[in-house]
Every structure is written in C-alpha cells, then in structure tokens.
Image 1 (cartoon, rainbow, N blue to C red):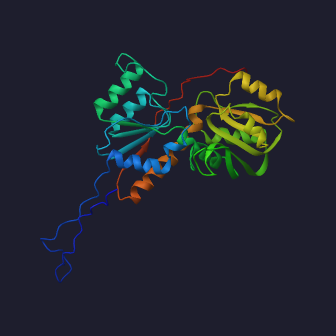
Image 2 (cartoon, rainbow, N blue to C red; image 1 turned 45 degrees about the horizontal axis):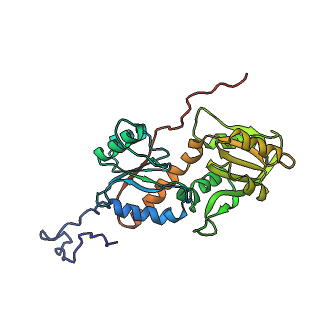
Image 3 (spheres, one colour; image 1 turned 60 degrees about the horizontal axis):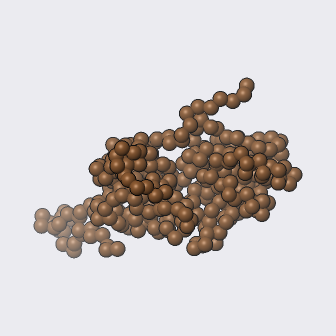
Length: 307
C-alpha cells in the first residue's frame, strides 16, 4: 500500500514562528479506496477462514471508489441497505451473505434484485464477513464469550487454515459457579431485546461453570460441545430434533441448552468489529466514519407464551 502523502514539507517558518506565506498547508488524509478497506478487512477476518460452503467477500462495489463512511449490520435486508444509503455510507459490511445460494436473475422484481439495484444505483458497496468473522480471533463467538465473562477460552472446532485460537464456536469457564437460572438471566441481559427472548433446557437450579457458545446456528456442534465437557451450550436456532436428541444423550442432564435469537447472538460482534476496523484504518492514516446499523433485522415481531 502506498504511504499517505501528508503534504508536510520542510519549509522554514518566520523568525516569530508563524508559517511562511508560501509554505504549503498540510492536507487532510485522503479517504481510503474500497480496495484499501478490503485489505484492512482481510487483515482482521481473512477469507481463508471461511467455511468451504460459505460465500464471503465483496458483493458489489468498485475497488477504486473512495470510502468515507462504513456501516456494519447483521443482515443485508432492504431496510438495512436503505439506512446505509440515507446515512451516506459508501460501504455496507454485513455478517450474513446476500447471495449465499446461486441465483439466475437479479431483476428488480425480486427482493435480492431490489437490494442489488439499490446498492449499485446508490454507489454503496456491499461486503460479507460471515464464517471468517465467526472463526477469527475477536470474532462473533469470542465477543459472545467475553460478554458472558468466560475465561481460558478456546475454539470448539479448529480452523483448517487458521491459528490455534481460531475456529467455530468457543468454550471457556466462568469465574465462579452459577445456577443455570442465574446464568440464563446473564445471557438474557447481554443480548439486544428481541421478540423470541431466551429459551432454556435444563434444571434451573443446576450448577454450571464450563460454557460452550456459538453465535448463530450451532446445532451441528453437539459432538464438540460434549467433548469439551461443557455444562451448558449457548447458541441460536436450535431445531426440535437436534435439541431433543441432545437432551436424550445428556449425562447428568448436561450439557444444558440455551437457545437465543440468531440476530441477537451475532449483533454483539458489530460494535467490536467496527472498532477493530476503525483502529486498523486509523493506524494506516485514514479517517473513516464507522457506524453500526440501528435496524433490528430479527424476523420475529412478537411471541405468545403460556401464562
């Protein structure tokens, strides 16, 4: 990457210390190009960490375009895209892909086509940081583990192309033993408010200390959770059959299960990711405004419960 030209020269000041009239004034740092932001993103969340089935990286945008504002969001919904456009973001970074599965048309008669058209017509680039953001150090599950106060954290599954600290899911220990009920209340307290709340499977008074977490859908990790000797597994989108089978296979009731909103479990990463990218760009001499979307893209609006 080319060094930033600050515009500072060696022109001598007047004897009283005031600048010479012919001395050039230092220019503000030029905004980075989208390509330069992509390099910073790759430094934090390398594409090589993405799962083989995943689709990450640049979805729309010219690498030569300047970027002064970046917005982070969980989902590239039309509402989120509109928020980014109205704020003036030249780049929208979302955790979830817009085009995970193949499409044969992006005509504006479809939801995904409308999204693509709005992005291109407004000059807003879209970048996906998905399972590479899950796996990386400081990624989704790391942030969730930190928010829950876990210590001695390690991956549930090791990344095939990463460091020993990288991989999907995390497991660690609480500083002190807690009841499952109190720990579930801690989980509820750290997450953004959504309609689905928090569902718990297990003895409310059961004691827990070793905690496994996976931001997003984690019901493919039950073997790794059991191997980690976790007392409880916190994740999202637990389906009936995997959850039922996990309860049947439990030893002394463990691992207990805490099922949270997919959106909520991954939203926690956004402020941390925005701060991390801002720090890298600042270190590189760029001044970029970064903001987290205020749109709640959880798909559920309300829930009915017994009693």
